[in-house]
View 1 (cartoon, rainbow, N blue to C red):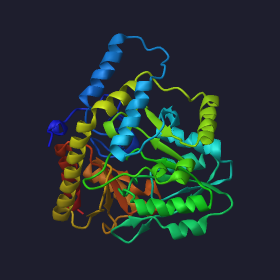
View 2 (cartoon, rainbow, N blue to C red):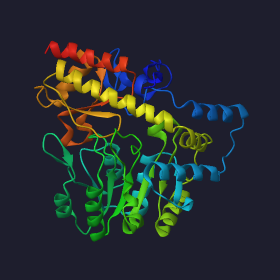
View 3 (cartoon, rainbow, N blue to C red):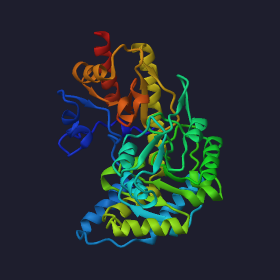
Length: 390
């Protein structure tokens, strides 16, 4: 396993949301940030080299699109998921959450219902509610150990106002990598009720051993015709600050309508570094990614063992992917508010409280595993010291 991820890099004073805004977000002093989903790892050297070359040129005028980026995206999707797409199906955007918001604006009307499967990535709530659409919650079924889609509840909830589902695929925060039979059952419901599908697949590359990501649009012809597949190299290669993403829309009519909406919103241009980073990452970053996920999965297993030995009241949920760990704190005898105060003031760590992902997450905390092992151990040791004093 590559040792590059063991290197501890000081991010304080670098305008990092994760590190420099932890005190503002959580209060407390000298917090160890283990919250927002970016990595404490440098991007692949090939990406840095490509960006350095762009900087050295020194001119940052309005960028023109390069077809070599299309080729890099097409090659990546084919290599990783055996998914063949036409280059004309790709629309480049500046971030997946804004893209989802634009899709909701373009294809639904105020008062329409948009489904989200809770507990879920918390911006999903805002992109629905702040666009004056009605959020229709389809809580995941949870048996205490395993999450799955509750498709019976979903179908029973659909009304004439229901127009769209926003799918988190793989799922953040619970770590599910949806299987083909699950996706096909959901696709059948979407076809039956003519629902558009916005599939957020930003975590698609971040899989544990033995897992396989299946793009929702690749399921069948009908799914391809109703799906907006939102992808990006940003989560995969730690490029979130560059704001690079894209949406694959195979339905020509839907693609044209979305393109027009982006143009009318003056949101149809990316920055000078986005395509450079995307092309370099997809063409040269695969070995880095393989080593990264081996390291992340080892970090996950390290936490599982640590919690069992030192924090027996807590429990790590089974995960199939992402670098985000879902920690069950239901037996800690602290309310969500008390638990947050305890973690900040007694443990000195900043975790994402599960309640922000929805009411179903109130007994959980989300921990970012994409950090050096030494950082992860320090965070766990801090929690243990506070735990021992409870």
